[in-house]
Image 1 (cartoon, rainbow, N blue to C red):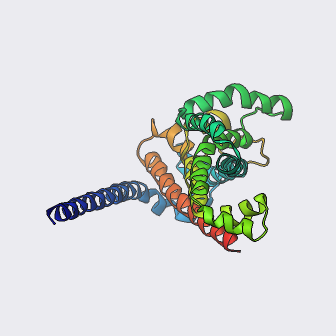
Image 2: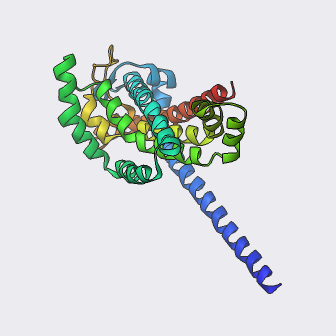
Image 3: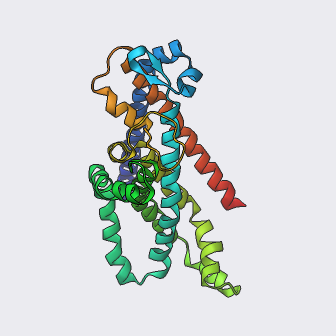
Length: 289
């Protein structure tokens, strides 16, 4: 009886600690959001929200703030990374969870985890030394482009998508697979119609986290995309992202210019939330269909 009471008290303490941690995390995020909004609101109020977002000229020297080229650049490089990263990530997860022998999976898994721990500046240096010259030599231009940024980000988000998707696939109950085989489905049909739909929540989580990293990545993107504030016409044109714009200019910005960079952060908050909602609801609707 006393042991049971002691366990209940321990559970209550752990529950309160977890609740406190969750509230603290939400409070910190809220403080950051409030600080960014307060700092950037004066420029949004002066320029106008739609003029700021849809303006095509970024010229802080003359007080002209339009971030549409950076918004387009961020969208294109993120979508490019997802288009390249999701198929390889999910395919790799299927191989690791369903096909690879246990010994082979045990050897491959640490290598994948190692990719997640490599600093972004190393990825950027690799892109600068290998991918940019490769694009320049085979497709022309300077090599600093949307394609270079997408390739680097696809490599960077691959471990996140693969690891979470593999975990979700391994969590699919064997009874579901056995029932599928009993009904006459073959191995690949079981993966397509049983394993993937059941694991969709974990796969979607991996995609969302990978996308969040792609949107928020700065150093590697700065090193390979060219950082030109104009709307691109092709995949081989240079771009500047929202995060790159903030990092490159915050060091010397002051006054209204600094406020404009904080306003860019506000748009980045909104941008991330919209993309997350699109991915989650879009993927959920597709799986249900």
